[in-house]
Length: 227
Image 1 (cartoon, rainbow, N blue to C red):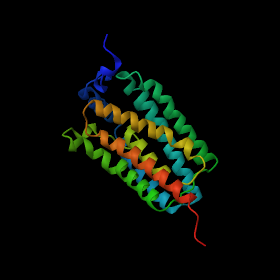
Image 2: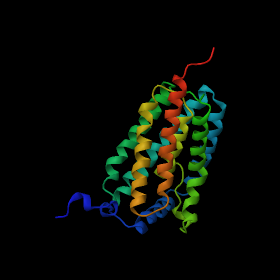
Image 3: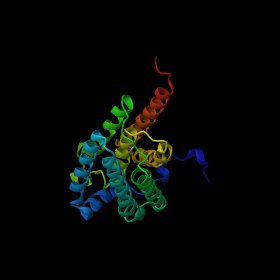
C-alpha cells in the first residue's frame, strides 16, 4: 500500500474535467432562463448597496439568502452530488449560510453598508467579477457559453459575490457569515487545481483578497484616530 504522502490531488478526483464542465451545461439548460433573472438581481442589489438605505439592505440580504438556498438545493444537492459524494455534505452548509443571511441581514438588520476604502473597493471588485467576469471564463478557456458559471445559479460566482457583499458591510456578525463562502471558494479552487483548470486562480484570488481586505479593515479600525 502506498504511503499517503505519495498521493496528489488528482488521485482524489472522482470525475473527469469533461464530466465536471458538462455538469454546468446540464444545469444551465435545466434552469434556463433563470440566469437572466439572477444577473439582473445582482445588478439591482449593487445599486441598492450604493444607496445604503435600511430597507434596501434588508432586501439585499434576503435575496442573497434565497440564492444560497437555491444553489445549495438545485446545484449541490441535485446536481453536483451525483458525481461527488462530498457535495451532499456541503449542501447543508449552503442552507446554513442562507439562514444566517436571512436572520442577520433581514430579520435583525445586522448589516450596514457603510464600508469605505480598500475593503469597499475589493468588495465591489469581487461583485463585478462574480456578475460579469466569471461567466467569461468558460469561453476564454475554449468551452461553450452553455458551461459558464452564472451568479445565483452556480456556487463559485455566488460565493465570490457574497464575499464582495460582506466586505461592503459593517457588522459584528461578519465572523459568522464569512467562513462558509471562504470555505467553498477554497474547496472549489482545490478541485479546479486538481483538474489543471486555470479557473482555480479565481477562487484562490477571491479568498486572498477577502482575507486581506478583512485584515486591513480590522487594522484600520483599531488605529487611533487623529484629534
